[in-house]
Length: 352
Ligand SMILES: NC(=O)c1ccc[n+]([C@@H]2O[C@H](COP(=O)([O-])OP(=O)(O)OC[C@H]3O[C@@H](n4cnc5c(N)ncnc54)[C@H](OP(=O)(O)O)[C@@H]3O)[C@@H](O)[C@H]2O)c1
Image 1: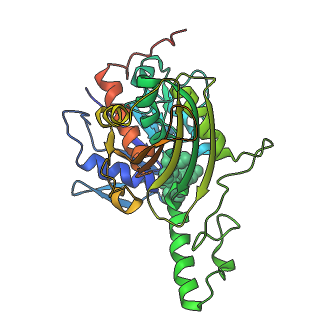
Image 2: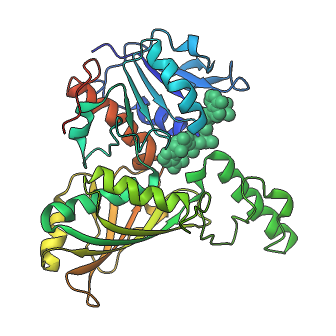
Image 3: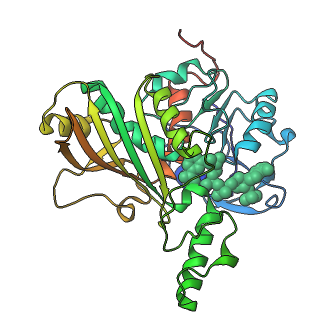
């Protein structure tokens, strides 16, 4: 299969992870006919990025530059997706994999985490969206439990790293940390707060993205509605509190799940262990943390225990590299699985 891949947002955090993955991606799984074509802002145009010992030049993201591509992974931002994804499709791109939130809840766009709802790829009409990073790692163990025991209710609290907000947020955390230590005042970072009004360093911020009229943040809302969409459970009882913590890479989640059917701890661990994409930490003395998972592919699940306070309930601790499973790896796998299922060139119909 003759794939000419473009990466929109190639100079960002997700874009650089994608390029790293592509350097070692087995050709048998996704054959690119030429090196990927890289796109950034006008400011980055002309910049050179090394890929397999070859210098690739970043192009300006203007619609004409999408001519000749057939697959585009878009990892810039919502405004860019809104404007440029239709332009890419108009210029002959057959499949856009969008990591941003703009198209995720569009009923005509499948929202896919590979290992959860691969079959939804089949009805795409040109765009397939990947979920929010905190949803992507949550939905994998939820899918495994849902399939085996049925989900009744989910309560999730996230501990999200700053890389979830891109490379500028990572730079800000590092700058704030350095200057706080140098000045000896751990809260004196006014001049280094550019992205959000709160300080990232030495802090825990119970608000990611804007607060909606409901009182939930946009990030919390995304976790709720995207989980329901991917699990095909529009009425699933699920609530979320999303929190930013001063970690560079790796989101963690405390997840309380109430199941419809009774279970034994052994059955649950078997189900989780055998689900694709999950690494289960079932030794009581070890548990996954962001420092263990940066750069790794699976979703790590540990601290699995029975919650005695409610019927058929259990607690889990879920950790993953948000740039991988939450964005770059999932996007690449979507393209790969769509190619394997012959769904890049043929667009399907949504089953009703
Ligand atoms: N970070 C995560 O964990 C994560 C997880 C899931 C989904 N996502 C989604 O992935 C996307 C990228 O996130 P990120 O963390 O990689 O952000 P980032 O580090 O801030 O990178 C943003 C990228 O978009 C490019 N860009 C910005 N404005 C543009 C424009 N007007 N035209 C063309 N390119 C433009 C930037 O180019 P320049 O370098 O030239 O400015 C850069 O390459 C976002 O939509 C985000 O919602 C991120």
